[in-house]
Amino acid sequence: MVKQATSEWFLPRGGHSPARALPSEPIIRNSVAAEASVPDADLAVVTHGLTKSYGDVDAVIDVDMRIERGAIVGLLGPNGSGKTTLIRMLSTLLRPTSGQALVGGFDISTDAADVRRCIGLTGQFAAVDTFLSGRENLRMIGRLAGMSSSQASDRADELLWSFDLEDSADRHLSTYSGGMRRRLDLALSLTGRPDIVFLDEPTTGLDPRSRFAMWKVIESLVADGTTVLLCTQYLEEADHLAQRVVILDEGRVVAEGPPANLRRQVGGIVVDLDLRDSAQRSDAVRILAPTATSPIVGEVDDCHLRIPVIDAEQLADVVRLLDRASIAFHALSLHEPTLDDVFLALTGHATDHADETTT
Amino acid sequence: MTTTSNAATEGVGDHPTRYHPSVVTEVLQLTGRNLRKITHEPTLVFFSLAMPVIMLTLFGQVFKSIADTPNFPSGVSYIDYLLPAILCTTLVQSATTSSTAIATDLESGMIDRFRSMPIRAWTVLLARNLSDVARGMTQTLIMLGLGLAVFGFRFHGNLVEAVATVFVAVPLSFAMNWLFIWIGVLVKKPETTQIAGMLVTFPLMFASSAYVPIASLPGWLQAVAKVNPLSYTVDAARGFALGSPSMGALGKSVLIAAALAVVSIVGATSTYRRIDH
Image 1: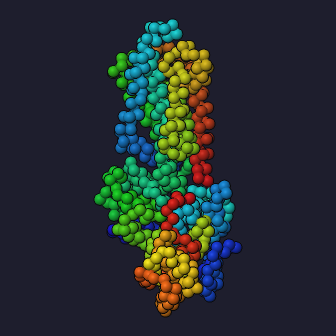
Image 2: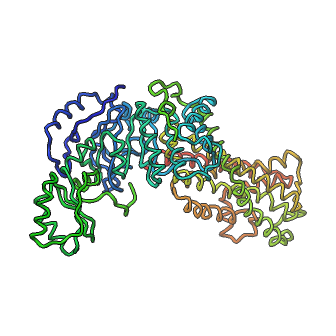
Image 3: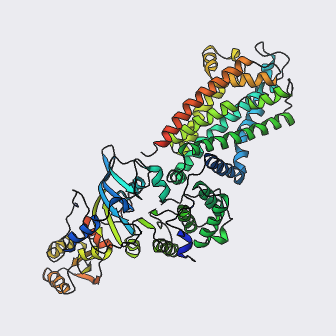
């Protein structure tokens, strides 16, 4: 399958417009046409109005998504935004309440067995058998994926080498570090050589070195034509790996596009402002609001504000306005917008909701 | 990290290995996996044996004098009466670990992995059952060895009857393991399954003919004991051990086990298929 890196923006298809409308760009129309020209069955993943409700609670609402084969798409959102629910539906673990999805050209509701034959899933917790060694885990999954005993052994050796687990291949898993378990978990998901890999927060809880190692593995997957849907809370991770990101908030797709285009949505630059007196915070927000390209957000009970502006020239305006209102500040600096800023601009709240577990 | 792109995903597009594994392969692989857990963790078997050993020791002493009461078969020592029952209750108690094991697999994400693979749903459960019946039987044989070597237990019948004593409880073990697999997939929390296990096994064990003759129980408890499937299995095992086989008890024991197994298999597999849906 030809790898199609979509470099353009497109709005989510279907009747549902994002909760907060994004400023439109001329390329939007073109890219929707380009996307729509690919038949559904040729896409790695396509969903139409995919919805999952638990009683009155909607975990995923009306998601329309198209992932071309060989792409790596980041699925971003805070805890409870529906990322895991979406991944679980796509990997046939959860039945959707309504809507449709094709994975590898197969319907997740009616052809679950076919879907399972072309996917690999790495969940949030390392699903490895702690009573087996790394090699035993890989061999078992290989045999269960339909390989002969010798094929499964060869595949295990191959993966142990690829994932730098050779030295500990025959050791009990209790001796494995968190990073090693995650690598083994990913290796297990790849044992059957899936075309499409769903990764649900594969680096959560890993130290920076292990995270970087994981990134290398994910990059190598995509280099070989595997389609990857990467669920993450780390904007930096999506920024680094994904050609395109889909941002979920409260179960809905609120934005979609290449990270660079999303950053452009926020404006050219973000001003970081540290106020001297937190009592003046609301005054500062009110005065600077007309200058900002999207709502000014800052951490609660903090003097820190992020003000997205068009370009550095507006820095002077910011300073002048603050001076005129006699609002003093400790420090003022500029940064290129990150996906974190994008998320704040789109949803009005930050990504670091650690209070709820994922659904 | 030495990662080459080729090795991780070599051969994407052509799938020489993408066929359904056979049922036998699935069951063997999954059963093997469950059994390896036992060999990796022999302390588990040791501690699961602690309960029946304590019962054998305590009850052997506490109820010794019951052998002199009129309801008790004459010429039989209490240990000869008790041990066949202990063999049966060991299997019943061991079955409770099925629910904890399956709940642990659910919690760890192992079941998610299996369910996201093209593996038949029921082979995962059958493998759980087979490995746990095998473990229960191992414990039973160890208990029998202890009974013979330490507690002075003796078979009263011939060799065939002795073998039958040990294996008569297998159908009930199979059925009870399915029941506990069902409880495991319903409850889903390993800690809760342990409590559920106690709640089910304790009444089964004590409101039965396991430790004292049913006739010596209070009236209402006799009524319970008479509908308790364990009573019939214990009676059958005891009949073989004492050299006076009761075909009626054996037949009832097998029938009840079969009925319980059918209900539990249907319940467990349908619950398993609907997990998370």
